[in-house]
Image 1 (cartoon, rainbow over the protein chains, first blue to last red):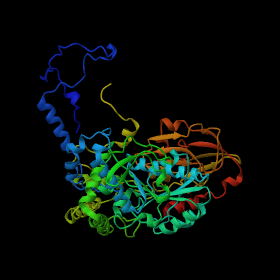
Image 2: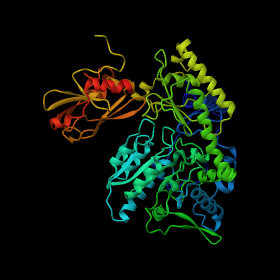
Image 3: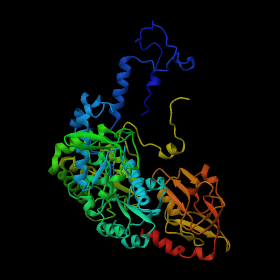
Image 4: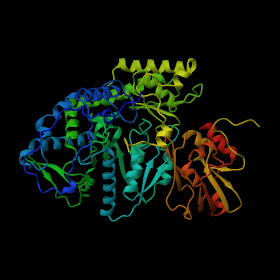
Length: 476
Length: 137
């Protein structure tokens, strides 16, 4: 289906709405070269505009339409109360220059939110400045760098397992460290012997994603932490997947010195798409002084801002990060409480393991052990040349979003499924039934799979052509 | 001889790495390198090849990155199978990356290297060993 752009629907004389002509004096401040005489807006009638956007929205698919088991992304349902509260004028109209006196409520929320994150992770302090998980990582690696400068040691290597998030090596490289990749063993844990071989006095730290991108909890994690600390290295935890462990594992106790959290995955804030996002970074007591300015503090009953932190790495975001995102996460935590937070991770892990147990006899399961919040199937053994790509397209025909495909790269033809804790037993069951049907079609009606999707507004996209000859703008 | 299965072509006259690169040792000093049939098959349609800037004439270690190949599925580093000096790279694949899919051991070669010494070819996989690796993988 080829949908015309609103500009292509434009036809002169359709829009009869006219702004009154300006009769007052003209400002001489704007240089004539910057004054536009015409604006190239589409000329469409009001009903045409309403229909255009309504029809586009009907072609969209989001978690408010159906299950969205996109592994590694945690497309959980975000409660509407988050939007209702954060959209209120008392929050949407605040200004960062309003001053401490008139911002006590906002500062209290930020302060308490940091405290909650400290309690959840066991870490000593949090910065809410980073505007995304990847930004939190970058900030964390900057802290690592600053730490070694402060103790007068020069270390230039950071170890990253091959099952880590792809942004980890990027953060490390941007801070001038060398990346060394630690291989996984066939069970999906870090290969501990290889890790020990690589651990020397040049290693500033290791970044471990926990659970890792295979959806597994690394069973060597305590041994790794001890070995790193004995070597004088720091242990960085990529907490993007905290949704599997929130309320159940306190990561400081495990040995993490630094850890960022992608708020959207655990605490139900909107997903990226250009932002705004939020990736708070926590630090153990001995590293808190290096966190970026500014930090919200509490002095007696008053809340204030502390920017006078001489050991800080500096500022990584204007003002105090993305407040409205922190607010949504704060609402979620307050709404659920301590026991509710445990339920998040329990249910996320239970849902994933239930799906895995029901699907592992239908599709190939490359790593067969209890998973955390997500698990991986692949296309090994499928008949008629059917691949992961074909399966993912056919799933769309049944009204589900497709799982993540071809990631992580460690597993050939990966189909990565993450149901999240917000799906009911009934919706999991529907997904299982659909996967069973699709597997039967692979044998009986392969053409249905190979030609999928059939029921979506846009049929199979030529990804090769799109990559080679992308059309990125309309018109000339 | 029967035609090998898709992605299973492992010519007898090459040496291989665990990361799915091949090297054809022309004489004692010079080698031609690329990615294997298995690698191109796993990646699918290759849409983009980028060599590291200033890679030609630079000295590199074994397993150092020379190029990045990209398909709709993944972007993947190509490492050098041996230590040495990069002599030239195949600019043709930058414009027509599909050559790597069509002819990974011929027209789709990636770079030529002056090998640092015979010892830098140690630990490379023989065809039978590489075939075993991809069959089990």
